Figure 1 (cartoon, one colour):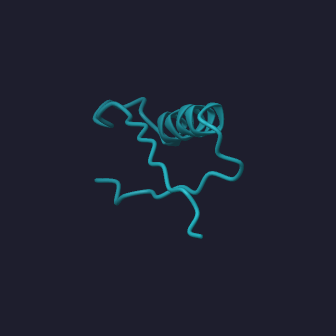
Figure 2: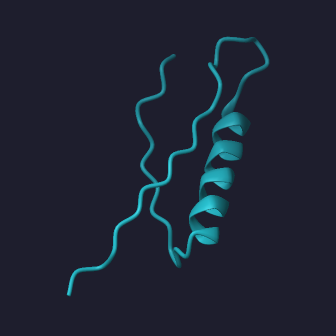
Length: 53
């Protein structure tokens, strides 16, 4: 039997201000993990796309 796969997406706002940094990405990851755990995930896996400079 294959494991059930669920996808949870957590987006962050554009990183185009002088004060933007990795904390926005961390906040989005925390929100996504909380959503996945609430949905029943026991060990969420993260995929980070390329972040524009």
